[in-house]
Image 1 (tube, rainbow, N blue to C red):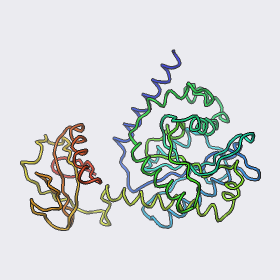
Image 2 (image 1 turned 90 degrees about the horizontal axis):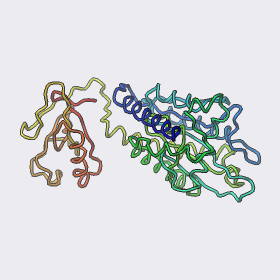
Image 3 (image 1 turned 120 degrees about the vertical axis):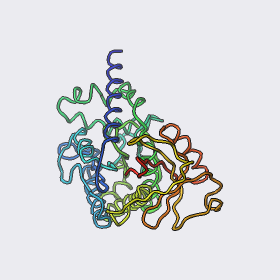
Length: 363
């Protein structure tokens, strides 16, 4: 029981740190961290003629180059870009220090050679193990900490081979789960349809490296190195290029949606003018936050009975440049605005919460 309490306290501490990191982060641009698993003295899974550490490093660097070449506003960081061993907590530290917006961990799966190996790609997000197979994958990837000195102290007594250690994941935050699942679904879809990989679905499991990062994050198993067909594909240059390209296409879609909801425009010195109907707005004291649900943009002002508003009344708007941004609801209570968001999303699925202070949109 003392050990269980220690695990729970540690998890609650992580929750606090993640919340603090999110609340106070102020960054410019978008940062993605690419994490090729294993490396150096840790080969990862070993196939008949290849090693996981080499395959994922090659795919990771190809992915990074695609992002750099096509998204000048994105900062690409690697947890490793050479064949070196990097401890799991150091990988997370790289991402957290950079206040990254997205974390992509790349791996290859494997089964014991005594068992017939399946084939295909899986994309994981942090969560509970829904099956023994998911737990086995998490155990295999988490076992990298056994290469680290004093891992028991460093990871608060976590032992990757003991199922009871994974109880801590029941207490982990789902703060980034929705974004992680969305991105994981994009990646899985592109790997299956673009690279023609066998689909083993999006899954949840307790990966230490995903637990430690304070941002949307996924872990991709690019294929089974213990399967002859998968291994042959993954170790070829063309296969690695295709895998990297599929993940890149998914990233491109994710980034486009991120920009849409973050309202990234070409003019960094834009001014925001707010025009509102006072009756629809909450009275907020100076400096206090006011929350609204933004659901629509238009090139001009809409009439109150416009069919584009889908019957929402009363609505508010603010203006950026020549674009009218329409909002619904106004409150200083986050729980209340989240309930409003659910209502609005029944009509506008891309609606999201925006924050104002003294009538000005907070970025």
